[in-house]
Image (cartoon, rainbow, N blue to C red):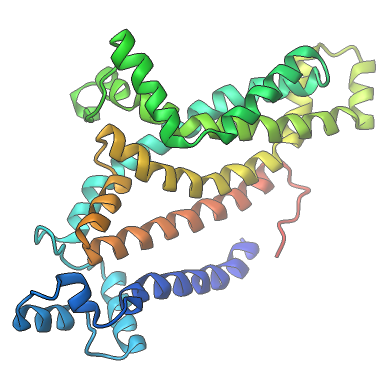
Length: 314
């Protein structure tokens, strides 16, 4: 665990910089931030109360560390929009977004691993060239366009799945997965193409190694050769891309959750931006940054699990 101890100070430094940047957004507004957010017609007492609540009457560093202290204690403030405790809002939305993102990553990997291995083995042949062409189209397609096409084909034309809304897991696994199916496919669409391309490239390189020739000489079958001997050493780049894809999933979730009416963190952030609900915006952004850092730390640890010979860059 020595590598973890060496990494933690850097991670804390990143979190401090990003949280300070997100907290300082309000101070970057032109003029008086209180007037800019509440409007010029807001009564003076409301503006004064806002300035006290957002600590605009304090210096930037003093107010930031006071806010950070509240954050560490689990106090994210109170929503301007509805007066609800922000921590309560987050706990309501986090499970939905986590489930959606896990489902999207699962769908992407279920398709990408066999296709990436297969196209790497068949490099240069027709199936490989066809999939590569389709991957370019998929990567270029914006997430909102994929969502629109899926809505038109399945709910509108075929009557499958629901257009919007979310069914809790407690109300039934089938109904829950049905409500998340299209949003998850929308998020997984681009990720599948990226994962496949990365894995295909590494499989091609791995199959050229001398030890793979030795495995062929021992008479190993193609399936065993690919999935037992070639897949594991070819997975390091894929793990890196999976970690980096968290940012894409988080940004895509803002659009997808809003389009499909999924009550997750993405739609909460969108609603907060629309209503200028600063405590909610700041809390969601901090939470997303922490999630991104933790996932990438987990990916670094998985490097050692997949291949103990790998030394994680310090």
